Length: 266
Image (cartoon, rainbow, N blue to C red; front, side, top):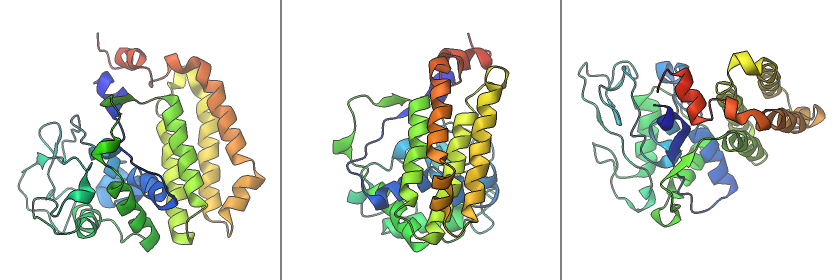
């Protein structure tokens, strides 16, 4: 379990653009989904780690075996729930741009498939146009030729902090509705750093990051959120907070041995 929680499939991202970065950030955010799934912190990335297949995914409300999910679960969807537990294997999204049919119902377009997942399977609200197009752009940019030689990559303080920075950078190219979603995604990305910090050893660091997350939330309500964040030197303070943690990363739950010990694994 500790290994699965500190490693994920390597990202096969063939290119980067403003739209792809917007989609990448939202792909990792529960804000894109709705209902119980969003409240549980699930995102597209929870099942499709870096666009690949999360073979360790196991949530009792959605599956009875790892790497599978029930897409007609009543827990997740009032629309599609059929009262029957019938989880199917989670698909790998790498190479989606070359497919002509998607899902068990053989939906003919990636756009229709993705909209059904968000709005029907998980009861999410219809995303802003720019946000939705970004998610599609991200998935289309996941290509086999771009896959690294190493199938698995470590989840680290550096990669988690980079997710925060890339999400904030994406807000600069976003319209107002999409920017609001991205700032919420950035808050969630900060939370993914905090959850890896044992409270006993990182109490002050957690407080700093939690304050930075609250500042992101406050900025969402401002007429010019980016100006507010620049005025409060948000990025500088975030970088400083991460730099303080860096020398002690071995004591965080980014470290497999530390996490294994916390889980009671030998």
